[in-house]
Length: 127
Picture 1 (tube, rainbow, N blue to C red):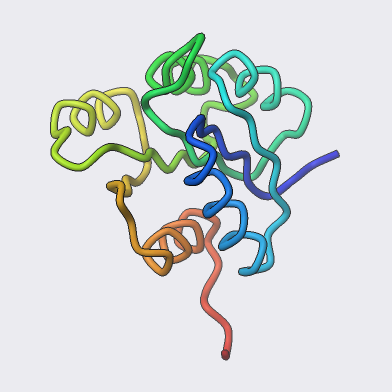
Picture 2 (tube, rainbow, N blue to C red):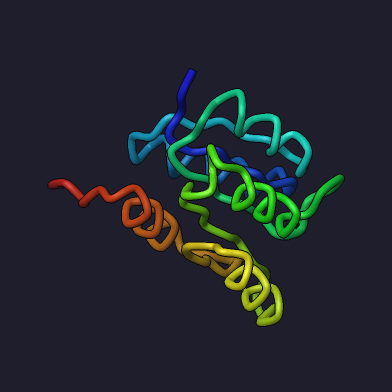
């Protein structure tokens, strides 16, 4: 079963917020709370893109991103990386590993939705 967006985020309040705003924008969502589950979900759901937190249990976001870029089935998958405010090094590493976009936590809902639309090649409709 293909979905639009896989969210990998271990902080319940952030995960709930992302799930809500992205579903409200019209996308189908699946979510996981650790890096190993993210890798398994990539195979299971074949998402159109991934929203990936850097700080995840089991395997961090960098490991997941390396896996995505190394796998022939997912190497071109758009990845939006969530980084904590002030973590310039995280952003630099993620960029080197092939992240497509970044959103810094705390984020504005419109910023996340706009980044997802851009990565999926969609344009905001009327409304």
